[in-house]
Amino acid sequence: MAEQVEGHQQHPLAIYLYIWILLFVLSTFSYLVDYFGFQGLTRWSLIIIFMLMKAGFIVGIFMHMAWERLALITAILIPPICLLVLIGLMNVEGKYTTKTRGQYFDEQPPVSRIVEGHQTSH
Image 1 (cartoon, rainbow, N blue to C red):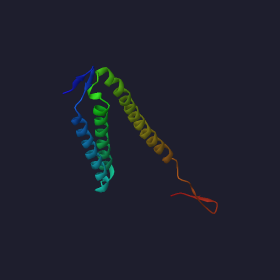
Image 2 (cartoon, rainbow, N blue to C red; image 1 turned 30 degrees about the vertical axis):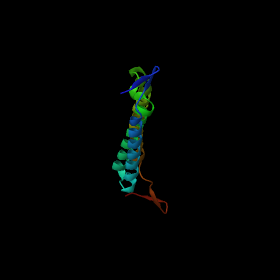
Image 3 (tube, helix red, strand yellow; image 1 turned 180 degrees about the vertical axis):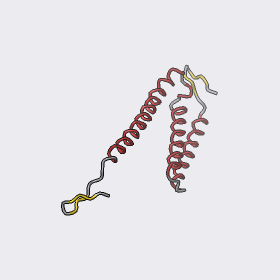
Image 4 (cartoon, rainbow, N blue to C red; image 1 turned 120 degrees about the vertical axis):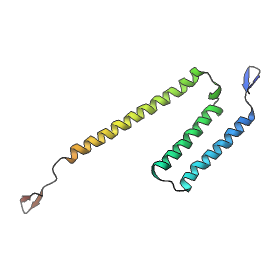
């Protein structure tokens, strides 16, 4: 597949053209998600799936990560994976904080109605 040219690895040009066309098709699918009017979780799931696929092809082929050593791949992929895990943990913690604040602040008795100086209850 890959040829050795003066100590450098040479990849066939066809693979780059194929990936470029594939990126164009995936971008078209991303735009079609909005064109067809998908909403909610379906819309965002499709957009993120297409985005991650495009990013994977760009990193793998155009940045030559598909042909690199495992040590270099893990050095580049592990930090973003750690960030995604930390973002997920922050998301869980944020939802928990919002939920508990809502519970405690909503438990306070409602503002009393004052009618001519007299308090009335419900």
